[in-house]
Image 1 (tube, each protein chain N blue to C red):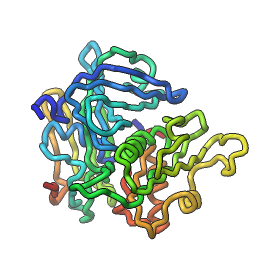
Image 2 (image 1 turned 135 degrees about the vertical axis):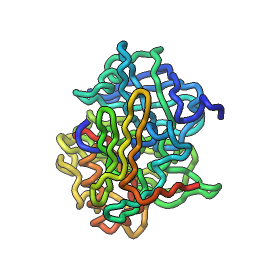
Image 3 (image 1 turned 90 degrees about the horizontal axis):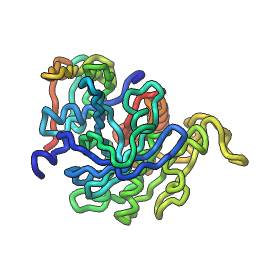
Image 4 (image 1 turned 30 degrees about the horizontal axis):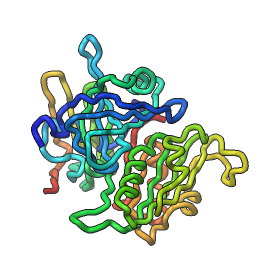
Length: 248
Length: 85
């Protein structure tokens, strides 16, 4: 690694591809020379600079995992945001974007640690665009042919608000996906629309006695409600890793 | 940004200053004695600063003030910081 490849150094990425994910969000694939790959769950900082020199920096989770300089972000537009509206509405293929990373070594899942395959159960719980780092973990799990049992509980407002919907509709081997809708469920859906409750978590996630590694990501209120419920259900707080992205 | 996020957001800004990943470092809160990974702290993002609060007692652990020409870190809320090697 040269000095300019360090995660702390701002790099220039070039937009290779964008894809609409929801009415308010999209995924962005960037080629970032010097990125050098990332662990599933890590994030990147993105910096925008206005003509007058004013800069705004925001953190975004990385949906891709593994080696290489190609990075996929997924961004939800915050109506009053300084950065996300530009990324969702204006950025086009070929544009340059300043990016720093990969960042953070805590909210991550590795298929193996010190050469030992990680086979323990993993429970992923995502709210809205909080799915992004969890998708990276799911991709890392699939790419490594991991035998660790994976479960995802994904809470979205409506079916139209799901990121990576088609990918999650056909789960890879060893992954179980449960959808929960908070505002509008598909016709005939058994669970009525509503926020995740402790009963949902008890019925739809790995029980505490299996000691799963738990990753919860979403808006702050969602993360705190879910994490508190998991502790009430007997999960060891040290096994619950959380990432909040503010918002609602 | 409304409300708080968490210590994961410190990774980028503090990577400019430290050669270790601060989010995996643990700190002891001077006020309540809670020991936690910095990723678990509550972070209030202000235009020019990051206010890091204890997850347990909400007292300030650290303030990072970011100016164009300098960064100032106030650390008096921490008894110690433990960094994995």
